[in-house]
Structure formats: C-alpha cells, structure tokens
Amino acid sequence: MDQDLFERGLEQRKATLGAEYVEKNLAAADDFTRPFQEAMTAWCWGFGWGDDAIDAKTRSLMNLSMIGALGKMHEWEVHCKGALTNGCTKEEIRAACHVIGIYCGVPQSLECFRVARKVLEEAGEL
Image 1 (cartoon, rainbow, N blue to C red):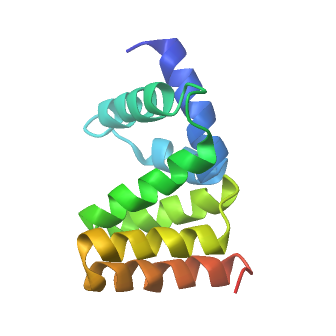
Image 2: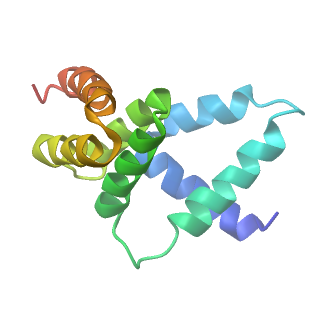
C-alpha cells in the first residue's frame, strides 16, 4: 500500500465524513477487514478524492447520484452528511434526488428523499 496515498486519503475521508466516524470504522477493523479499510482509504479517498480536478462539493453530488443509483442507502446517508460538510445545500441535495428519480426511478428517488430528510433534520437544515 502506498503510505502517502493512504495518508492523503485519510485526511480527505476525515474532512468529508468526520474524524469520529472514520476513526470508529478504522478501530473496528480486524485482520479480516483492515486490508480493505486501508485499500479503500488509499484508493477511494487518496486517489479518487485526492486531486484538485473536481472540488469536494461536486464530488459529493456525484457520489450521491451514483450511490443513490445503486440503492445503497446506508452509504447514501453517510455521504449525504458528507455532502453537507462539503458545502452542498439542501436545494442541491434535492436536485440530486430529482436526477436519481429521472434516471433510476421514482421509488429510488423517494428512498433518497426519505434519508435526506432525516439527515437534513438532524443537521438543523429543515
């Protein structure tokens, strides 16, 4: 594993998802899951999020759309919180839910709205 890429990824992952969340996940890793946690941190967050070609806010909106399309609602909730951290507004999150509805179907959009409402309420945005 590229240690520099891991460190860059760890910094970005904490900046978006919160240090407490990331440290909890890393601390819970064992011999079975630790290699994946390290590789995912280096690859997704170090390589994928580690350049300046796309700003973090845009990456968050892209993630919401892709994760929403996959229907991975636990991850969608985590990344919805991260999108707020990265400066996305409730209007932008709503627009992402609309795009999901257009390209992935109304039922999936409704799921995203349901989770977004929870996240926005917890953040004091609704």
